[in-house]
Image 1 (cartoon, rainbow, N blue to C red):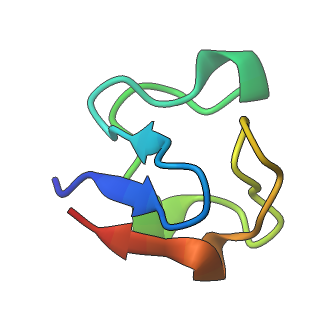
Image 2: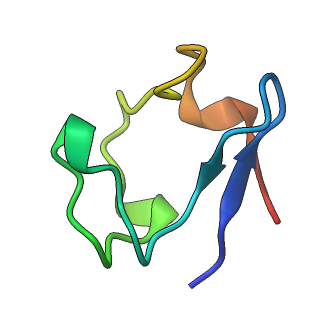
Image 3: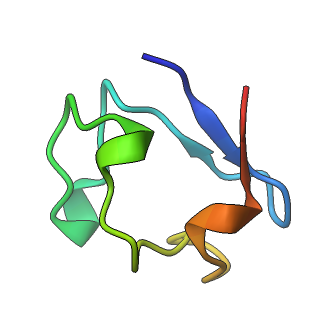
Length: 52
């Protein structure tokens, strides 16, 4: 699964790790994140992420 990078702050969403603090389980593909997912560092939406 591809990693995705926030184009605003550089945070990397790694699907192998997920985002435990946001309740996103390890193994969750970026495409499967909820539509209201936001960057945990800067708060922008999924539309501001690009595949790494």
